[in-house]
Length: 317
Image (tube, rainbow, N blue to C red; front, side):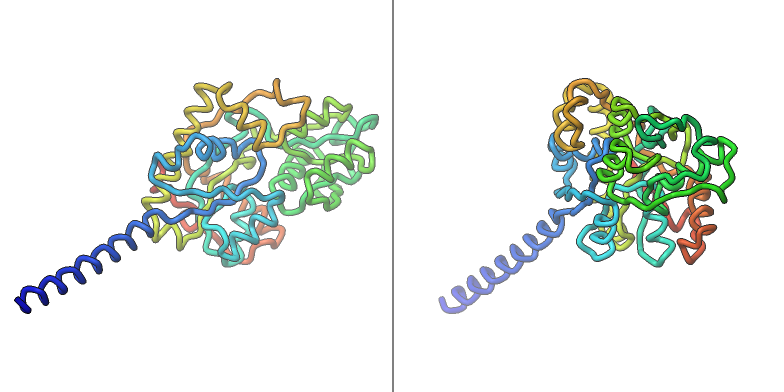
């Protein structure tokens, strides 16, 4: 009788231990992926995947954390507060080139696919209507960023020497927009939909990034997270891919999400077109190398980076 009772106790302890271990495995599998985003049009598939429950459908618990500036988002990523983030192609290469363990897992948008992302405009009432006329005049940008790169490329394509390009630092996009519209600055590089708003309020479009491959947006994770959680990353990307299809096939069904998350100005809420999104893919090798060469030339990064070190395309849907 005592032997039987002792055996039952041992069996109960073993069952409780097994249940604890199993619960721990489940908790690990259901870890929350903290992913940084910006209120940008190109981040719309992420907002749709969250709002429509697509992350959960693909077995991933995701918390999208909204930031107002790229700098704030990048600080959170390198400090370990985030496992990944939405970014342009320039920023993660700066982090990678300065010793951060960052890997790009997918390209989400490319201006060659649909429409512009960034443009350079002169202020309302300005007599400047071309980059040649703008030569030497200050353009408000965020330095060593994709808008900086776009501004330089547009100037050079118009025949302006790099040495004569004049820029002023104004990282906050909202302040940059207001400074342009109120005439405090001669010109500025802005993202959509603020480009459309600025034009409607009298600013002159000097040029945009339509057709420029460097204006790509990407999804980024820390290398450590990818190595330890490949299935979670696969599920994450599968959810974003499904969101892409949903947006492209039923754009009107996600307008409410776009209006809410992208912070569209009141005048555009009912009429600004919902962007289309390409199939998730790896960033173009040639384009990535162009970005790296530009950053090296400016001495913004301090190490050579091979494509395979910066990109992991093995987890795409």
